[in-house]
Amino acid sequence: MHIYDSQKREKVKFESIIPNEVRIYVCGPTVYDDSHLGHARSAIVFDLLRRVFRENGYHVLFVKNFTDIDDKIINKALQSNQSIEEITHTYTQRYLDEMSVLGVERADIEPKATQSLEGICAMIQTLLDKGFAYQTQNGDIYLSVSKDKEYGILSGRIAESESQSRIQNSEQKHDHKDFALWKSYKGVGDIGYESPFGKGRPGWHIECSAMIKEHLALSGKYAIDIHGGGADLIFPHHENEASQTRCADGQILAKYWIHNGFVTINGEKMAKSLGNSFFIKDALKHYDGEVLRFYLLSTHYRSGLNFSEEDLLASKKRLDRLYRLKKRLDISHHSDKNEATNTDSFKDDLLKALNDDLNISKALSILDDFINTANEKLDSKQKDIIPQIRSNLALIARVLGIGLKDSFAYFKLGVSDAQRAYIEELIQKRLDYKKTKDFQNADKIREELRLQGIEIMDTPAGCVWEKV
Image (cartoon, rainbow, N blue to C red):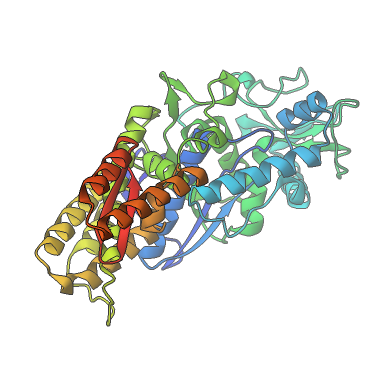
């Protein structure tokens, strides 16, 4: 397997620290507002990576955190007259619910900043003891960037203005490049937790280093195999994480760094701060979660994705073809007496593409070829191929997370209960006309349904319909 390592800036062969085991940490959301399609894309990218590793026979330990201590959460609480706990619980649960609809599997461990304070404080104390950090007169604690000779090795950048991070400038800092490990309690309008350094709260960056150490880190040169997140996190967040772990524990935080590209709208990165967020909850009002997943999956993870409704609809048509094949098998009611043997190269070809830095374009081309070939063989009445087709469909569901729905239900997505009842009533009338050999009125009903975007098919299993 080969992946693009953000630090080396090239595609490299993946070799896990422990054979057949991979440890992955991905930065999760700051839970103060609804998640947008940028969050969805990142989650889907690393869900795919996890699935590909698993299909390759690796045991995967996957951790994704929730930042529930942050300036934005405090501001939200002040503006909404809600407690910190109410806000973080609400948006954490919404995120999990939306990820489930998008087919993103839950992480093995989902730590929160509020649950990790002991480990955070222990790491800060180590940094103080080793002289890499200092505490100011007002109680804030900073990491001294100049004392880390390898700072900038990940991003290729040295810390610039602190306006690029979540840390407020302080006249008490020794250097403008230094970043906060601990923020002292400032009184009304702030939140604070008791600690050996006084009442306060951790900086943003330290929580991830501490969580990795607690839940994932191995002893040795590298703490974990892969650290991932959006490309916007490379600097300063991931650079600072790497620095903290290097200074505190003498370890390289991650053997490989993987970052996904942005989702943009009209060329601008999707972000709440820019006011151009396309919230997942809004997208799900119009599109099924699996359709949205397939669309976000269809562009290579390192490339930018400029959201386009036209492209999304084109992507749905591609997914429709998979479901038409699945539906064709379901209509046949063919009973597979034996499990399929691997009689074609589909699995090898699909994994070969995905093992090449998640080459999704190649993988989907292989998927299209499989669908074409499968339909051709079914057209020629090769029923012995059905077990292999079913096996390949199961592989697609397992690795890509698509094709999981009932094929009949999929083509009725977006049809209300009242519409379904009306359609079923017309179909029954048509059947009644056919029984009396009144084919003229039966054909009129077919045409009436077609004008409403409903196609019907007479099959051995009865009359089935779908929205087109």
